[in-house]
Image (cartoon, rainbow, N blue to C red; front, side, top):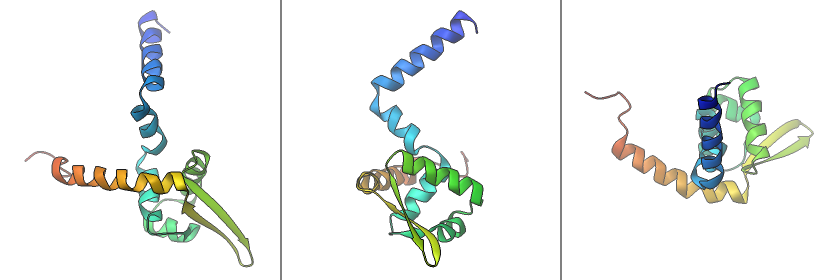
Length: 117
C-alpha cells in the first residue's frame, strides 16, 4: 500500500470515529437494512413476511437481520411450535424511526429518483 493510500485510510477512519453521523450511516446505510427497518416500523414480522415485502433472498435477509441484531436495532424472537422467527425493532431501532421519516421527507423534496431532466 502506498503512503498516500495508507494516509487516506487512516484519516477516513479517524473521521469516522470522530463523527457520529458517519458511524450511524454505517450501521443503517445499506438499501436492504433500510428496507427492513422501514418494514419493521409497522410492528413485529416473521422472516417470510420480511422476505416477501423486501424482495430479498433468504441469504441476504438473514445477513441483514443478523447485522441489524448485532447493532442493537432489531430483536429476534424464536417460537418452537410452529417453528418461526419473529423480528421487531428494539428501543434503539424505534428511536430511529423519526429520523428515517425525516430523511424520507428530505428525499421527497430533494432527491430526484429518475435523475435530472
